[in-house]
Amino acid sequence: MKQTVEKVVLAYSGGLDTSIIIPWLKENYGCEVIAFAADLGQGQELDGLEEKAIKTGASKCYIEDLRKPFVEEYIWPVLKAGAIYEKRYLLGTSFARPLIAKRQVEIAEAEGADAVAHGCTGKGNDQVRFELTYKAFNPKIKVIAPWREWSIRSREDAIAYAQERNIPISASKEKIYSNDRNLWHISHEGGDLENPWNEPHDKMYVMTRSPEEAPDHATYVEIEFKSGSPVAVDGERMEAVPLLQKLNAVAGENGIGRTDLVENRLVGMKSRGVYETPGGTLLFLAHQELESLVLDRDTLHLKEMLAVRYAELVYNGQWFTPLREALDTFIEHTQQNMSGTVRLKLYKGNCQTAGRKSPYSLYREELATFGKEDIYDQTDAKGFINLFGLPLKVRALVEMEWGHKPRYREPDYSKFKRD
Image (cartoon, rainbow, N blue to C red; front, side, top):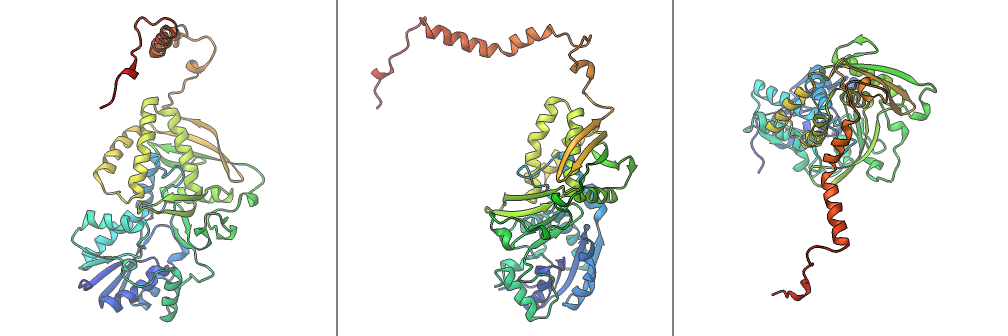
């Protein structure tokens, strides 16, 4: 028995899955469907979206520009945390879902809807990210996840369903990739990518050109940070959205930001995804370089350990949790003096640090130099090394004593029998 639903708000992208969900909901639940699409920087993907949603059965379609809060309230905190999932994935899809789901619940409450729906498959991580957010903001609202209910079992089945109902879709049996795009990245999954031995086709990429086709000269870019957040590129102060767009353009032009990854999904299986995160790649490197100047050793090392946990929380959809909020408090404290500029050198897919500076730098030439100095007395090192190496010295002395004539005879354990 399906639950009774009067009105549902659907997280709508206009892609293959959500395009067929609107008629499916009406056919199977007989309910009113309101579509909601968040503009997170998809660009042309939003063109004609409202008309398409209404044409396929939605009574209304919300399209809201959430790019600014997306960057400032979701991307920048992850950047400050240095959170990278399994050392390579910059979490572009992961931190978009909580924002979408939160706004979806708010629209449902404003519209008097008794249910929300999403187009996530039952094998993926996104279903968890959406539904944990639903629980955080309205645990009583009904949730419909068609991929866990219907008989459709593949993208080929979904395409056939759409064609039978004359639903316009961009996917085809030849163009089978599943994509998710926003200001931060674009992901590619499915099709021939499901075989990890297959090399991605260059025509698949959207935000980056191939390193082979990148310019034959190096490009330099300077990124300025204030309290851990990027605020300027090449000396020009910019708002968050245009700043990220500019970095995407310069990095993409130089073939930077491609990642081919086999990752461990939260639901227990491995998956293969190809990601393009051009501007984000520059920002993470620049931010790490600035931290190397400003943070003391113990704080930096602890922060690096916590970054792994932070990335897991974001990847697993645990954005609105007490632990992530507590970690943010620590991270924000570490970013108070994270102001300065980093210069990067871009060349054919490679990104190298060309310089870094900060008024709060803990690096001091008078300490690091091998010349004469007054602050650091090199003769102090002898006592430090003696104390720091004391455990090693004692252990070696004991071994030397046992290697000659030990003071006490070693017990003969062969005389003892086990019960």
